[in-house]
Length: 100
View 1: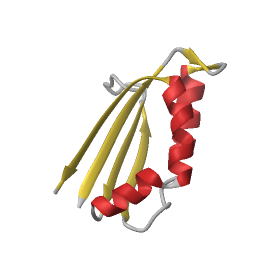
View 2: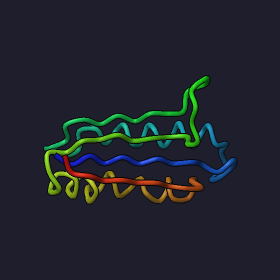
View 3: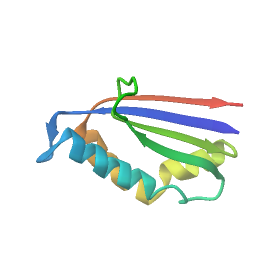
């Protein structure tokens, strides 16, 4: 199994919207990817919550049966299509993949 974890911090304003608006849109776009390909075991999209310590605005925690399933997800047209929006609205992106 491979775990794929990504964190994003969004710009205060980008693409004509606020940080909160862009975070919400990115979350919706990512949530729509939860069942794109076979081999997704877990797919959680999390936004920062008031009262909880955080340095990021949005996180994706996902698990895949193997690297081939993660690759299929990464290369799926729907996932590829959301990258320009997130790229234009984020300040930073942190990612870690690891095998368990």
